[in-house]
Image 1 (cartoon, rainbow over the protein chains, first blue to last red):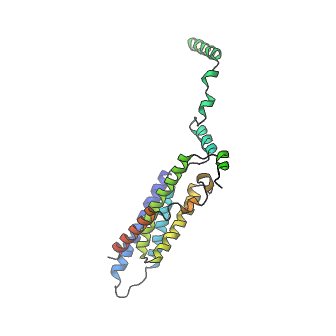
Image 2 (cartoon, rainbow over the protein chains, first blue to last red):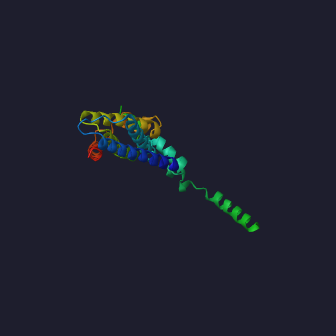
Image 3 (cartoon, chains in turn red, cyan):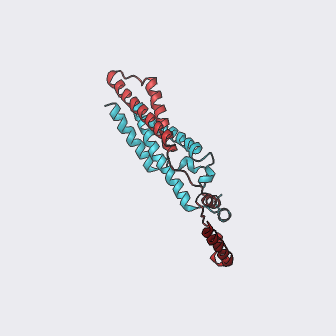
Amino acid sequence: MGLLSNTLLLLSTLLLTHSCYSAHEHTTTTSRLTPTSLPLDILLETIIGASLLCATIVLSNNQLRPIAHRVWAGKLEREVGAGPWGQLDERVGFLNIRTKRADFAEFVKAEGRS
Amino acid sequence: MLDERKLAIDPVVPENVAHNTRIVTDIRSLTSSVCGIAAGILGLESYAGFVFYLVGSVFVSMLMLFLVADGKPGKYFQSGIDLWTTEVFGTSSVASFVLMWTLVYNLVRA
């Protein structure tokens, strides 16, 4: 995303700047008494440059967050590892201390052997 | 649609609603300045400029719908129309549009 949006940003800014300069040149070189409308190529360049710049701004923005609580909680649990209901999964009162001690004894034995 | 029963069954996260609204507001105020620059270069005057602004806002809304909201605005906003209307007539975006429009118009035609 970074390279693509930077390239788009550069390209669209160049287009807009060039069309601005062209429009200025057009007004200075044509007579003020008989004003002519803007040439088609400047018009197209302006429209394309502005649309590209708008698309770049929209693309390079932060992601929206889902507003439904269940969708958001699921996303947090999957991506961060802890959702708003994390305390329901880790209840210290239900910890099986004998299994933990047996696990730790196994671990120490395995460490000592290697 | 947004009655209490629906909210009790399917609660929303207020921080995320605020976050999404802030992102849309940011995009709107930036893109409306870009629209203002384009309107100034094109030399639009009077109602044509405001029509251009409305067309540009609809274009930006469609970009947001497909690039940011994945075509499902109901997932990110409390009502589907929020994406199209938030900050379109808000003071910051219209003001920055008119600011850039008049500035570029006068710079180009000085």
